[in-house]
Length: 151
Length: 151
DNA sequence: CTGTATCCTTAGGGATACTG
DNA sequence: CAGTATCCCTAAGGATACAG
Image (cartoon, rainbow over the protein chains, first blue to last red):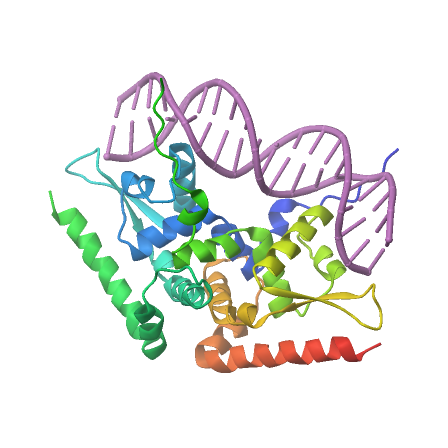
């Protein structure tokens, strides 16, 4: 008879460590990019995400949106005046990851020689990181308000 | 005849954006966890990573180690006095991502109710983020020196 | 100890047609 | 517009066995 090493409960194993938790949410390129779009580019609707240059397919997008909603990163809202209008808003939890996300972008700008991101982005962050983040948060609020006020 | 939409060069498409660049390196749970181990837990050898509680298999580990080496995140060194001893060191580039990585861990500790990470970790970071990071960097140097000085 | 090589199964994901 | 459903293929990756 073949002896197999005890299989520990996978579910439990992947909890209890902050890096594992982060890996569960960010360790997927599509989630990563959706978060970028919703946090930094003001994208809110299904088609917004679908038309991102990276070209995610419909089934994968639906899968990732519900995954992020389940992780309490996105808030799915149906416009009361138009049922066909669905918007995904970043939650407080998602916004709180902005500093780390921006930190990672700044790092990328430094080391990716192909990056088209403006020099000024990294520079501005170095000079006033909190200000930059505050600006982005205010921007998110502004865009959210705008979306639900326009017919 | 069926018309297909023009397939843009995938390779080029995935460059030129800091989030895409970061997604390429961190958008994989195994890379994420290896980086954690090498940056925060002082792990250096093949078996160190192999014995991580998450249980990566040998072929995947080899694949990710070479991927991270190719991305200039890890520096592969053979001990001159013992050829069978191979160590992977975090590069300067890898260390520079520490602030973002730690920021993400702090965020995880806040939002993962299952996290076992010490409360003090998040607290310490809030009080003196730069000090915490500097401490980690010094720690990495210390461990590296130690590894090559011990027989 | 540090990996390769191989086998094999499942999950990821692209393309596309379809639905309310 | 916002998804579901299906087809189908490829890559991911677990479990070994093996090599230097």
